[in-house]
Amino acid sequence: MQPALSRSYHLRFVGDWGQANFHRICSWLCEEFCKRAGPRSRVAIWSIRAGGIEAIDLVQEGEVDLCLVTPAMLMPAALTGQAIFQGRAAPNLRALAVLPQNDRMVLALRPDLGIRSFEELRARRPALRLATSRNDGTNFIGYVSRLFMAAHGIDEATLAAWGGSYVEDTNPRDSLARMEAGEVDGVLQEAIMTPWWARIVESGQAVPLSAESSALDRLRADHGFPANPLPAGYWKNVETPLQALDFSDFLVLVRDDMDEDVAHLLTWCLVETREAIERQYRHLPPQRSPLSYPIDPSRMARPSIALHAGAQRYYREAGLLG
Image (cartoon, rainbow, N blue to C red; front, side):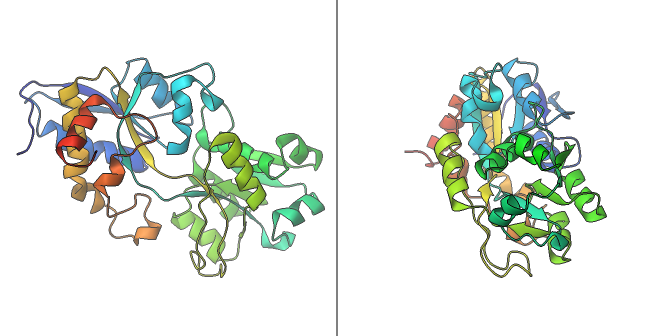
């Protein structure tokens, strides 16, 4: 039996900049929730302007009801105000679901540099113009990218000493567009499944470097970041597996004081109507989709932070929690 709420609700969701996956997901969830809530129910979908951390701030402060964030590996630190969340702890955050997304962070360089490994990069010390996201305290990509480089022995001071610099944008699409246009010498980004990455790698405009095992081990030990290798053939001209840093999974987050029945219905919609969002990605092969499919409900029930009580109730009723 489908749940329904007789009362009408006005909710506020935070998606992305407006044209990416979070807004699409919010639109799906908005429709499915409102169909099952009172007749005057409405959902507003807000955009972000910076790197995404502000969505968590807005939920924690009670200004909005729900947001989506990625990567999941960073979110436990939000609860206690550690790492990028220093000074902006969000102890009231709770999850409704994980939406699976198999992503990585990769560094790729111009082929004419002749550099095929991090060891060669450190030895040659080129004055790289490296496109990536801003490390401005709001952008998860920018934050992780600097840790990734530092783990390979190339912190920002080292890059500057070589005569290099970061060329910063907010959106990964803009970084990859710079690489495609020849404005930079390299790109350090996620969203690895997108056509932008495929174009620059498969056209020979960029050569991806395999991350070093020692650097990945350091990132796991110091920050809890897992590795996530790319298989051979992920791009048609990459014939061997490529070691990479994980940047996976979307989390759907709310406050712990959201009405339990609302959280329960939202979670029911996320799981039971997942076909409606999956079909919007099925024109893409699963390994090229920014939302992995088919979506496994048992995986949805295992976020990197605690579930909201309403979400827990749904997953227990569905037999997805012990």
